[in-house]
Image 1: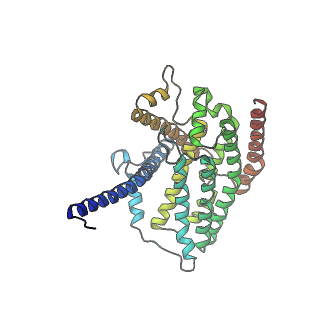
Image 2: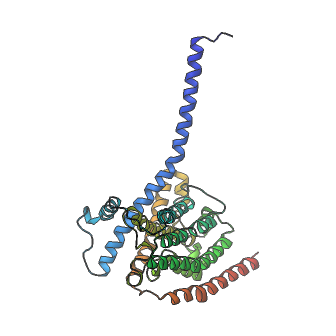
Image 3: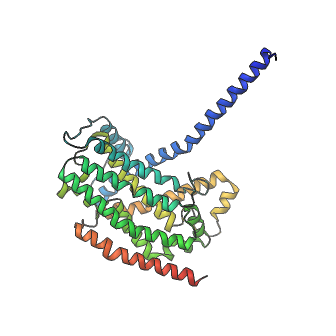
Length: 360
């Protein structure tokens, strides 16, 4: 069989075209992931700046003002400084555990963002078990903190790691029971379905009004999960120097810093999705769903703006709480979780289940 030169060129160009299509396909797979990561990093930088400004306002001082306009680049300057600092390791510590710990803490929290619906058409993975995926992945972060504390070969660090693990276990159970109550009301574990279930009845359909007890428990548990005051016992400065972060420096210390703010942002986003109606807002004579149908890009942009506005409103509450309430003792923290929040959240779940059964 004779194959002419023109046919060979055609075959080669076709093969080249197919390979280019495969490369473009791979690039387009990673574009939404990198866009989400970039958005999350920007959100963290904004949170750090907001916390410093709000804290300065509460304490009647100036706050950051030199790094960029209104000190908005202060967090970026701090991150750059940590990036170029020397990475010190304890000579008698467990080096593999010491090195892996911060990465596990950050990656486990970052994966949780994949199920957050920022708008009607903007979610990385709309899974049927989205809520449970978040709970399962977030349970891995304390393991990283425990590894860091143990690998440091330092009593203060190890005690901080143990406290982080005990605190996470104590407050994850009430938080999970509150999430189960929400999934029962929405008949779904998908984050998108939960938001759409709240949008049926407008402002008064938000789960905040249908589950007020669950909202308060979720709020307290999420603050404890983020290790924010008054629940910052794993890194209590007066007792444990810096807890599990004591032996860390440079980029690894920066990863812990980023992980705490990532955790705060994801908790605020889940409060918005589960209790505050997500991207929906009730305005008389204006339906957000109609905006989505008329212009998808404009509707998506409005949805993102509404989601972030609700999220940062909750963040303000978390930041203000830091300078309002004193730190609890360890026994008080565990008593609050096991003796109060757990029975109340279990009773709330039973009430919700009974209500759903009788309404059938």
